[in-house]
Image (cartoon, rainbow, N blue to C red; front, side):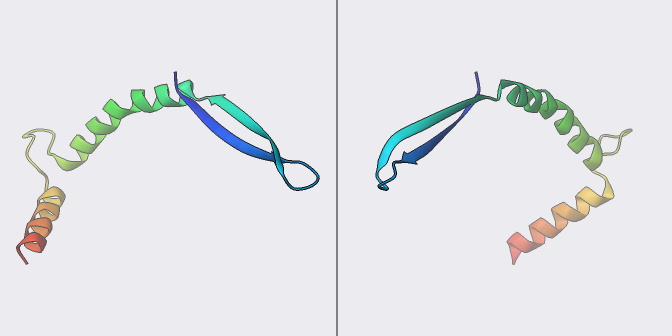
Length: 74
């Protein structure tokens, strides 16, 4: 179960903290949706970097790799 918790300090009229309010919100649906999107996003990332026929990096990915290597070399 995934939950968000928030603590709120409640002050009395004289300004002293008299109570603490704990709010718990169930966020299991949001966490489940993020988990379900992880694999499709990984597939989209792979498709955006590779050629569909050869499965080799496309030109854009080669340029990114080359720039990273050049930067690390400097």
